[in-house]
Image (cartoon, rainbow, N blue to C red):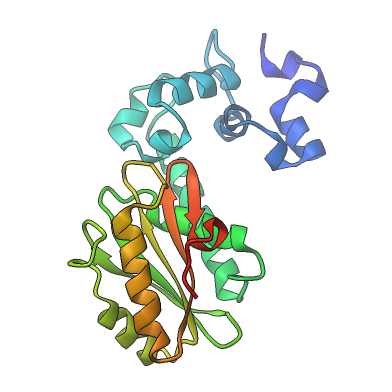
Length: 226
């Protein structure tokens, strides 16, 4: 049965307008994006099939044009729209942080880091440099590869923080494996960064690890040495 024949309270678009986007499932949100179905399948059916076939929302959003276009009801135009929607989301988060909301709402910071780092295929170490009011000065990706003492150089973080006249930093890296549990290397490099930056009176407010399951916060886990 076409979605237009469903009761109003069950249609994804009407549910979004009434309850807000956060109340909808990934399947429902994707169905709104798709708008129409194909003979024998509603937009909701196609959305469910896509999420099942790709293994979730992230693999779907990361898929290539060739992979997307292999599925019935999708083509280059839909792929382009999907990429545009993804980039708009990233830019929206960028602008929110540029307005100094880094610490007023930690969840914004986590969503920003997810949009910036979760798609990387290798480990990336980044810093959010903050001014005396904890407003964002810059987000920069500084090191690539496994996160341990040999690859992350505290002196380079200190050097860049001083160049930007930062008063505090939030450091972050991703785990391509998807796990967010801090490793022994993660803990070690955090300790070294805290010590190095403290010498120039710059605070490390947090170390966040981005994975498939969200973002782990050293501060929230009680692992950050002050």
